[in-house]
Length: 427
Image 1 (cartoon, rainbow, N blue to C red):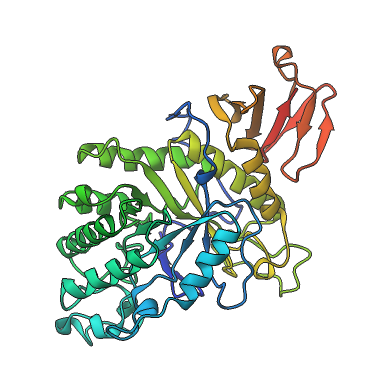
Image 2 (cartoon, rainbow, N blue to C red):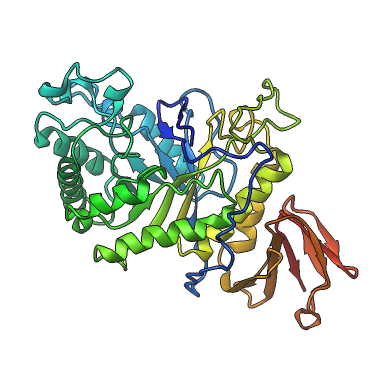
């Protein structure tokens, strides 16, 4: 498979050898036939819905979607301590204020060291891009001071802190696994001692080679030094339903390392999406062989990812992103809504505070997800991962209304079209 890298506007990089698609678009994995569910039978918390927020300081507007958790890179070491002992929380405080006004809390990603903290033995050994990865600092004391100062600054706000982003890429981390363990455990000790209300997320690997890396990372004994296991569940190149297998593989790794009860969060995943028809920016061109989603497809894929993510047992899902010009679920850096923007709000309204009771997949790829709302009403979300079909809803459901992802509702009259875009049928 062709291996390429895609550079994001924030300097965040990811390995996209797993993101290549057939030119015809998304394809179902032939080996994935029946759902392997991990249902909690607890209400879907609003905190399940998160988003990666980037480019606010470059003029992007804050999210207008009901994302209750914002993942930010503004807490990077070089941003808050550009010189030893000189602290700058201006941009991070600004994001924290915007999150608070939107009823959201922050997941602050730790990493991106300042040049003064590089291990002297490695200076000059890496390219400028690779040097953005977290090298082992000259002393752990410098790292611990950075983490402790950050945690003290936001003490009591209930924030989460996430270790180094995509450590299985040179653009994410350039040290050894033992050094990564020491950085993780040092950060965990400082954060929990400074702010017992905070949670610590492990380093989240990129999907290419991610499970192998995760196994090696966990074998260092690092599992005692985080509260949540993070991973980047990018499903580009597969159908969203492939999330079930990906999460199962990560959970198997966690169980084999004695961490079967640790929550698993998807701290980052998304898709390249074309500009919508109302965007004032230049329409994005195709990036062969990478498949770029159009309006209908992007809304369908986003909604299915959030549904299947919950079915797989994920407890939080941070979409990438709000503010990135390539993985954008909103155009013009937050100024122009598109189908994916509306779909995010709609799937939130369908799922938040409801209990997912059951999910089935028929032989033709039709999914039926039974949910019970906080008021005790039963509703059904349906889609077909392979194309389209028509059904007559089960008379026992007593449903009379169909809602689309764009928020519009129509009465049910006879047969119902079920295609790649989830619909909600309700009494």
